[in-house]
Amino acid sequence: MTKRLPVLLACLFVVMIGYGITMPVLPFYGERLALAGGASRGSLPIHIALLTSIYALAQFVFAPIWGRCSDKIGRRWLLLIGIAGSAVAMILFGVSTSLRMLYVARIIGGILSSATLPVASAYVADVTVTADRSKGMAWLGSCASLGGIAGLALGGISPKSDLHVVGLLGCIMVSSLSIPFFAAAGLMLVVLVAAVLWLPESLPARASVVPTHRTRQGTARISRRLWIPLGLATAGQFGLTIFEGTFAVYAQQKMGYGPSGLAGTFVVCGSVMAVFQVVLAWWLSGRASELGQLAAGFSLMGMGITLLLFARSLPAVLGSVATLATGMALIAPNLSALISHWGTEGAGAALGLQSAANSLGQAAGPIVGSLLFVWRSGAPYALAGMLMFGIGIVTAREKGPIPEGGNSS
Image (cartoon, rainbow, N blue to C red):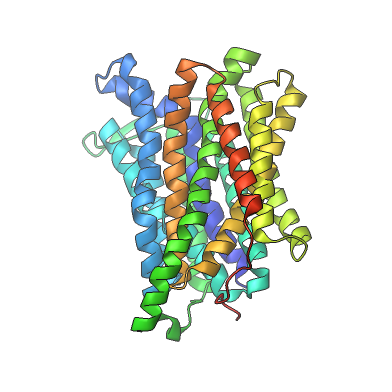
């Protein structure tokens, strides 16, 4: 595990850079192309929302497909496809000359990048013993958070002089906003070469054998149990993206935040998630059950989101966000470990379903949050806070051991 882990983490890191890089650039990039194409300013928010959600929806559809494929043909090739596809999407994003091209780039990015997270998680499940699986998933989650932070930082880098180069009969255009995407694509290609050279296949040949009739029956029964952790995955991402999707406007209206304050808040959120996923996984391993950690995580998320309703100073806001992020740091790796335990059809298939469940929450959170915000500015946080608290209470009442069947290699 130790020799392969750095390359695996680098794969996930660079793909998450591609996710994070669009957040600060997409509104400006979409506005430029929309206005150039004759769209009205009134339609801009709709296009930005669609460009944001279409990526998550593509992942929702294709992540389970990639996960199942990885159980049949192996993890390595699908990881390489995910990285190469993400690089292609970044280049297409950077040379887009119209909203249509931008939509195509987002769809391609969502489809191909969705192979990376479930397959990387399945890779960890292949090479870890059951007792250490939460730790391995925590390293992946931490690396994903750091990649998102790096993407946010890289998205703010552009040359001072405005570039504007049109080529191939007007089919491509390069501007100052294109530079971060080209930089991300370059990083992805470097990691792609490293993965080709140093990342071996993790799935044993015997694991790809078609299951027997008895195993299929067991799979169907266990799959019904997966609805519980999959529902928790959707709920956790729903609560997180309600915060991420509405906080910029909320903080600007209620607290007068500018770009630097907003950036600092999101960096704190990502940093706490990145650090605490690893720290808490190691400290709580053997001390608390996965279900107990999930209950604490949802309760902390509910507390952090609710406290945002009363926070007005910067320290209070950062404290609330740090509490929320600590809760998510407990939720993500333990859900991945639970789902890999309970999915007997194959770790890739089960973790692909988790990635789809995450994407569903990521697509729904900003839409529901924005609609509630229009009605009443504090409504998104009141709803998300109550929902997270309720899930934490219900999860804390659940009893029962983790079923056997995890990889013990």
